[in-house]
Every structure is written in C-alpha cells, then in structure tokens.
Image (cartoon, rainbow, N blue to C red; front, side, top):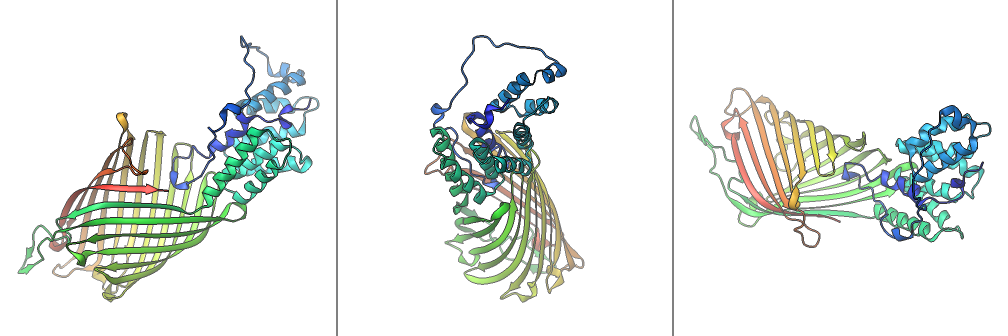
Length: 467
C-alpha cells in the first residue's frame, strides 16, 4: 500500500522542523525562523470524530495486517508523532512488502526528531533522486537544510517547491516565509547600548593612600556616558560554512574629566561552520584603543569560539584568544595576551535561566611586575517574574598573581577581585523597542599592594537594543 503522505502535504508535520531550531536556549545563535503563526486559518485540519476508538493489538497482529500497519504509520507521520513512528517502523519493516520510500521517509523523520539533520537530509535527498516529483519530501528537505544552517541549499529547494504549479497556496506562503527568514538571517545585524555614568573614583584611588612616606592621588570624580555599537554579517557558504564580518566599538566619554575618556574598536573577519546544534568559528581580528583622546594601543589577534546545544535546556560554549599588545606610550607593557573561557547555560523553562563559567587569562609584559595570570569564575541567574518584572544577577570572583615583585612591595602583587552586577527592568515598559534597565554594579579589589586596594559601587540606567 502506497503511503499517501509521500504525495500529499501535512502542514503540521512540515512545520515541525522549523520549530526545532527555535528551542535552542542560547539566542546568540540568531537562528531566524519564519513566522509560522501567519495564515493559520488556511491550515488543513483532519475531520473531527465524535468518539475516539482505541484498539489494542500485539506487534505480531500488526505485522500480520500490513495495510492496517501502513495506515497507522502513515497517520503518525501526518501528526508528527516521531516517537510513535520510531516504535512502529521496525514492525513495518517486517511486513511482507514494505514500501522503501515510506521506510526512508520514516527514518528521516526519526532522525530529525533526534536532531540528526545530516542523516535526515541524506535520506530525503535519496528519496528525491528516485522520484523528483515528491514535493512534500522536498519541503521536508528544505526545512531540514534551513535548520542545519545550509542556507544556499535550503533556498534552492524552496525555489523549486514554489515552481510546482500544483503547490497548495498555504505551502507556497510558508515557503515564502522561510525564504524571508533566510534573507533576514543573512542580513547585517546591529546592537547597541547607552548608559549614564557617574564615577566618584574614576582613577581607582585606594582607601589607604599613604604608605612608608608615599602618597597616592586623591579620588577623582567624573560624569559622562558609556556607549557601544556592534554589527555582524554572516555570508553563507556551502555545507553549513560561513564567512563572518563583525565590527564593535565601545567606550566612555566624561564631559568633566576628559583624561579618562576611552574607546575600543575591534574589526573581525573569519570563517566557521554551524548547524542545528553547534557553531565553531576561527576569527582573526584587529583592535585599537584610545585613552584620554590619544592612541593607547593596537592589538592584532586570533579568536577561536564554539557553541554546542546539548539539548533544549543545556548549552555549552568556549573560546580561546591570543593577541599581541603594542603600546604606543608605555612600551614596557608590550607583550602577549592569552585568554580561555568556558560557559555552561541551563534554562529549565522560558522564564528562568542559570549561567556559570570559568576564565583563565595571562598577560606578558616587558616589565615583569606588570605581567600576570588570572583565574576566575562567575555565576548568573535570570528570572522573569509576575507583573512584567525581570531581573538578572551575576556574581564573579577571581585571583590575579603578578610575575615579579612590585614597586614598593618586596613580593609579587596579588589581587582578589569580586564583582556584583544586578539589573531589574519592566518588560512592558519600552519605547522604540528599547526597554530601560536599572543596573547596580559593585567592584572590590583586595590587593596586598596598598596602591591597588580599592572598591567602587555605582547604579545607572542602561538602554540597549538589537535590530
């Protein structure tokens, strides 16, 4: 018995693949998905029955009735019940004359359900090579390619689908939404933030300013703004590869103390690969810093970063970076910079997430007393409360050890660093897509060197937007 699923559309089943890319906990993947809520009134639905009937049959009885087993398997595929399909498929294979195309289709659906897009894509392509007229199968192939970030191949398949003169209007509209999502995913993305700054100790003056006849500067005040802007574009390449271009700029401007103005600009371009579960990129970059209105340093480097979605609730990410610091004025700070970072994200539900990570970094310098290595950890908690209230809390601690005895100290400088960041905002308070956040930040540097022992706390309103 030929499965009608291979020659007719089931919109419920077809949209199942699109949602698989939307359950990822980490939004940094920026996986654009079509708006599948549009035109739902055109979705064909199965006729209602007055009373559902339940029939209990053994596996042997199902195998003995291949036509009935085919209809059951076909219905489960139509409904998108991949777990039931996985159970029924071995039984169907034992029938007298199983349909190879139905077996391949079922195996592909099961593979999709497990996140194995490579296997699903291979099976769909094999089916189309035998019968190119299976437009519903081609749609599943296109959706799987979309989920696997094979953008060029996905768009090509959607074009072929829309060329079918017998294509139902709702499937043509859904295909167009996928193509619009592909264009959005390949377009330039922008983000930025703006915040008011008031710092009563901009020069990080220590609490105890005198030591053995030496005296440090008094605390200085500064008022200004912090700002940042970032843009990124991924150019799709075959088989899930991409070429990424990014530009980032962030800084601080103090209208009453310009000597502490600073600006950092980084330009990155490099390649990588991504699919439904993972992304990895190798990104050479060039960074330049200005301080007090003057060029401070320029830094070429290389960053390698990766992300992996363990399942719908857990995500892991890691990064490693190397750069070569070249100071213009303070050449004794010239040296190499190394950084490694690992982060684990857990999202038990859409309203709550937890994040934790560890970081290690090392800075070399011509003056060994300014070279150091640092190890730290961080933990965060985000929550969406009732009445539109959202909060985020991030705690951090680190230990920094320098490589040579410090000036005025007959031992190496050691710093214990503690940070607290807490933000609160109302989700229903926004303008032009921007939701203000009230943020509190506390820093404590506990050092064995009097000149580097200080703390500071500040609260500010932060405005940010991604578009």
